[in-house]
Each structure stands twice: as structure tokens, then as C-alpha cells.
Length: 294
Image (cartoon, rainbow, N blue to C red; front, side, top):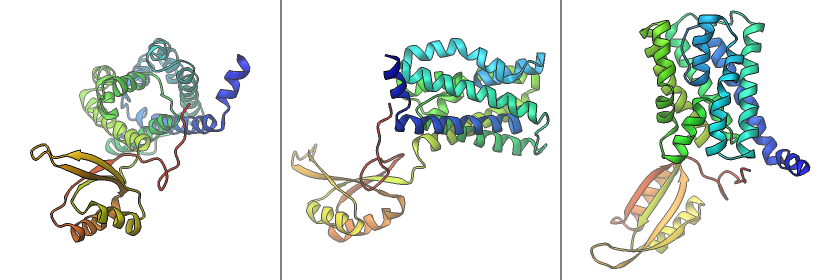
């Protein structure tokens, strides 16, 4: 049994996940120690509560973060999976806590700037990138990250909105102990943090998906395959009013190819009906390679 677990953990795909998690934890710790903590910007979640406790008692932020995550990890164990969740999340929580305290003790005053606005922007973006990398490694960073991921998976809320909901309490405590001005900046940081995590974990929205309804569907499909070098899926549908059967073309293209697609569709059928929407991430032939996230 133990050998099976070890083989599963050290699969090539899983090792890639752990590299994402390790890098993400380092990036998060830098954002926290260099920008958020010196500016007294509460980062939200368990680490935000740890910042408040550190302010009141002087106890290490990393240690408090690690201890505070224990009950939340139990909740996550129930809702986000067993071995898959436990190994990755325990790794992420432990490494983030260690890196945060190590940076603090090696560089007691790592402040790069005293400008509150710059600390807010850079701290939020850097921590968000770290969160996103951990997400790409199929892990979480514990705390409100776990609750946020549950809301994201179970209720369909976006990552940024989930962060905003989960981080309300730490920010309110930050307002009480650090002042409302800093709390308002922290609220902005939490939102930016979530958006940055969303971009890193779900893609940079450089892809577009298109639905095309046209009587010249065969000609359009041929142009897409040969001129844009993308595959096309033909869906069978029917008009809701006329009841007439229609062929619907579906394809995924790069953002920069949208105008080319519009042009070739207009050339084949000026009356064609086309919907172009955003695709966060595309995996498979012609785009990024797909792999199984264990």
C-alpha cells in the first residue's frame, strides 16, 4: 500500500505539480514578507489572521499560519479529496509557512518601498501569482484558499469573488488594529490577488471560441481548417422558430485570429450568424498538451 502511494506521488505529472507548488509558495512568501507585512496590509485568510496575531503578540506569522490551518485542512479533506488534496495542500501550507518565517528572520526589514499604493499593487499581484501557481499544481494554499476553492467548485463562484467573501473577517480585524485606510487598501489587494490567481491558474484568456451558423457551413469549415489551420466540430441543431435542421460549426482559435475568422466567414456567407466568446484555457492538439491531473 505504501509503495503504491509513493509511486503515485512521484509520477512525472505529480512531480511537475509539486514544482508548481514549491515555486508558488516561494512567490507567495516574498509577496507577504516584502510587501504586505511591512505595509500592514492584511492579506486575508489564515495568514491575514496570523498578521494580526503577530502585531499583537510578536509570534511568528508562519507558525501561526501553520497552526491556524489545521481545522481548515480537515474541512478541505472532506470536500476536496483525500490523498490528492492532503499531500499537495499539506506541502503548500508547510512550505509557505516556512518560507515566510525564513525570509523574515533572514531579512528582518525587507521593505523595498514605503509607498502604500506600490505595496498594495505589487504585494497583491505577486501573492496572486503564487496562489495561481499552487492552483496549477492542483493544490491549495490552505486557509480561505480552501474555502474559496470549495465555493469555486461547489457553487460556481469565480476565484476572485470567493477570495472576497472568505477574506472579509481578517480585513475587518485589520481595520480595527491597523486602521480603516489600510483595510481599504487591503480589500483592493485581495481583489487584485484573486484576479492574478485566476489568470495564472485558468489561463490568460488568449483563446476565443466561435459558433457559426450558416448554409455555407461546408465552405466555412474548409477555410478554417486550411487557412487558419484549426480543427472544426460540426454540431447538429434546429431552428427554434422554423424547425429547420441546421449545421453549427464550433472552433477554437487564438485571439489574434478573430478578425481573420470574421473575414473568411463574411466572404463565404455575409448573412452567417456567428458568436465569438472567451476561452480561458485550451488543452489538446494544436494548443497546449493535455495531461491527467492525479
